[in-house]
Image (cartoon, rainbow, N blue to C red; front, side, top):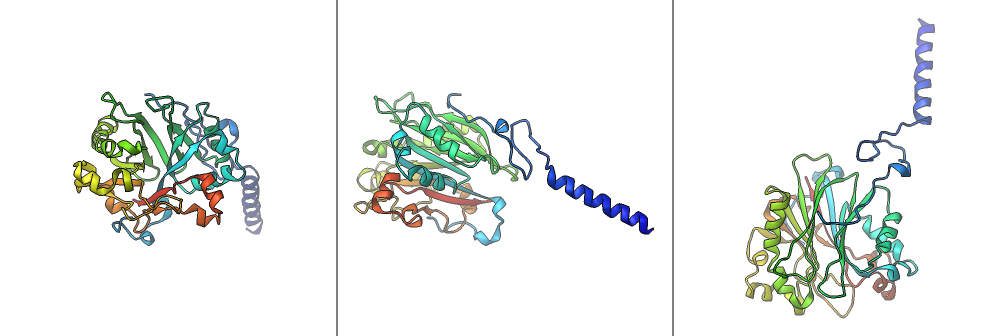
Length: 324
C-alpha cells in the first residue's frame, strides 16, 4: 500500500512539473490565445485596414464582477498623426489612455499613410486590435475614426460606414457592432461621430436617422450608443439650440445623454464646454454603473504640465462603464 501511494505521489509531481514547464497554447480559428502563456507573434490577429463593407441612473459597481463590466470611451486626440506621435512622451501617454478601455473610439486621425495608427497599435497590449474608417471630409482636409478594442473582452461582429446621399455630414458616422464576451445575447452598436462645429446642430439632428440605418444594417435588436466629439455645447450646439431645432436625440426621452451639459470635456482653461458626449438608448440606462459616465482627466492623473497636456489633446476622453 505504501509503495502504491508513493508511486501516485510521484506521478502527480511529474504532471505538475510538466505542466509548469510546458504550458500548451490553444489557438482558435480566429487566432486568439486561450492559455496563461503569451501567444507567439505569428498568431496575433491582423488589424482591419479599411472600413468599406454623468447620469445618475444605473447600478452600483459593487453588485457586479469586473468580468461582466464593459468600459467604453471616446477620445478626440487633436490632429493625430506622425507629428504628434514623434513628440517626447506623447505616444506613451496616449497608450496609457487607450488601455483604460475595453472599447474606445479615437477621432481626428489625419495621417493618410496610416503609420501613426499602426505605431500606436504596436505599442498596445497584444489583446488590442482596431478597425478604421475611410478618410472622410468634403475637401482636402480629411479625418478618420478608429475603434480600438480588447479581443479578450469583446468580439467585433461587424462595422459600417454610414451612407450620406444627401451630404448631411462633413464626416459621416462610423459604427461597429460588438458583443461582450462571456455575456449572452448582448449586442452593442457603437456609433462614432465627430461633428463639424459650425454645422453641429444640423448634423446632430440627423443622428436619429443614422441610428435607424445602423439598426437596419446590424439588426433591430441592437442597443445603440452614440459617442464622440459632437461639439454639443457653448457656441455650436448647446441644449437650447438643439431644442429649438427639434433634435430627436434631445427631445425624445428614449435617449439619455450620459455626459451632462455641465461637464467640461476640454483641457484648456479658457473653455468650459461639454463638446464630447455619450448617448444611449433607454434600454441601456439600467446597465450604466452609477457615477461612471464622466471625463478622464489625464492631465491631473498623469501630473502633466499645461504644455504636456496640450501636446496630447485639447479634449478629455469621455467614458462610461456598463454592467451586464
